[in-house]
Image (cartoon, rainbow, N blue to C red; front, side):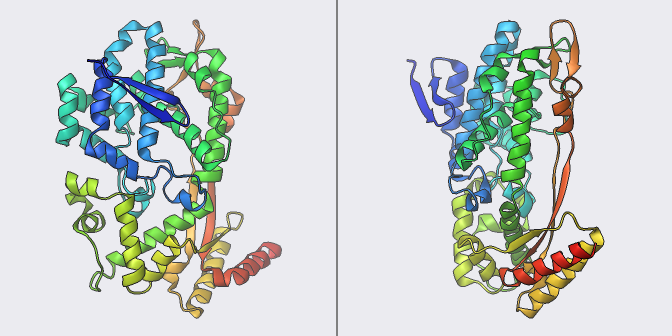
Length: 418
């Protein structure tokens, strides 16, 4: 008997699953696994919650949204190429499971644990029995086909790869809309329907965009640039990640002291290559925050202070020094280290320079414009997109709040003398 389940989503409204369709029954079975339910306990925007109080959305919510977009695109594409229907199970499974391998606080884990979420997503799909067995019921090759789409460094030469892992894919279409909505920044009014309606197949067999969709793509890429500058690369995000990195660094270099750690997090920190599936799944935002709370109350210095800073949002400060020469940045750092030490803080922990970069749009020739006669790259057809190819670099000095005035004065002195 066919059963329908409805997920009420703030972005896509009602997302309806019909178990009478085998591919949607597969998705429902995957959603009900322990590994996928874990994504409810992984914040989509990680430490950005300390900056945008509405950023409570989870990787679970996002993954359901990516599936919704993939399904809409699939229904559009089979109208122009019915044979594309053979990819339905792979597309639906990959869209749903693409973030299965995220660690606590999402991308923050990549920095603090050196965790590769794409590799873990592939590993879970190919080798974790509860996921693997569901996929194999529908096609014995599904785990391999889906897992291979998660490897980011392959050439973009096929439609599925473009839809799952490219600069303009189902993942980005959902998270830009969702993150803009949840942070209240209101940049994210992407014309999703316009983009989807303009999708077609180009002569090389890959996904193409009709000329009518170029302005919507331009808008999407401008939004991406704004979101990175105002949210993903915000200095509070950088400071929060710095503090978490120093927490893990302190634990690694002081394990001779008494530190409470459960077996799972111990492996995440000291031997991530030995993690099994159960230990991987056990670590999420809830488990990690519990450790931070325990360390705040029960550990030694500076671990206790670092955890207090993060939990109580009493963060370090940061000043932009991007405009200074590398020599002058090092002068500022030397001043900060002396002031830090003078105020009883370890300069190796509580101050430093944080470099960051925002990579411009990388076309990879993944999506071309096709007007029915001629094919051209996006950047060659849009002056605006060409400008968005540029990368931006920035640099911050991070330091304790009690030396803020001295640091700002020093920056002003150097700036005025140049």
